[in-house]
Image 1: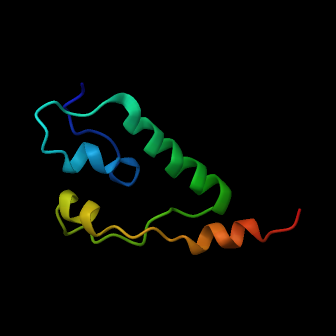
Image 2 (image 1 turned 180 degrees about the horizontal axis):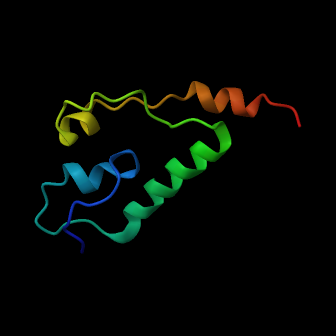
Amino acid sequence: MLRTTCGTPIYLAPEVVLSNSPGGYTAAVDSWSCGVIVYSMLTMAMPFAEEDEELDIRERMRIRVVLWEHLEGAASVEG
């Protein structure tokens, strides 16, 4: 089990930041980060709305909103 909160905030899985469990989290959180990377590659945009840097990281994770409309635009591109 991992316990350290480390990484770039936009790529962090919620379990890393919001976990209250003394057991920590597993390496499965890497799949969240990969999902953010794939989303960015497909849409040329980040998956989350602009975040208020003044807010605590836990609050930013709690109110984070996914911008699904970017994926709809990527799916409609003919190639």
